[in-house]
Picture 1 (tube, rainbow, N blue to C red):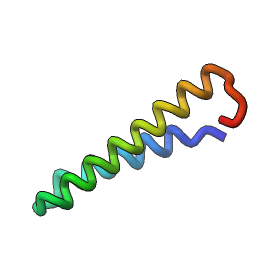
Picture 2: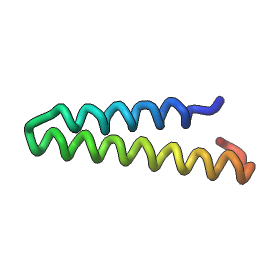
Picture 3: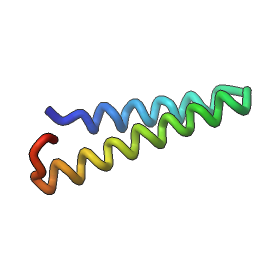
Length: 55
């Protein structure tokens, strides 16, 4: 099952929420979470296209 569209959506949601948060630490945390979601989605995309078992 492909989870990376969901991870991209979650990353975009965290990124959008970071613009609404006024507290600096909370904004940084949301940006980091969105980057992690995008990174996992990118890794899953590469692993899925490479055909490596376990994806």
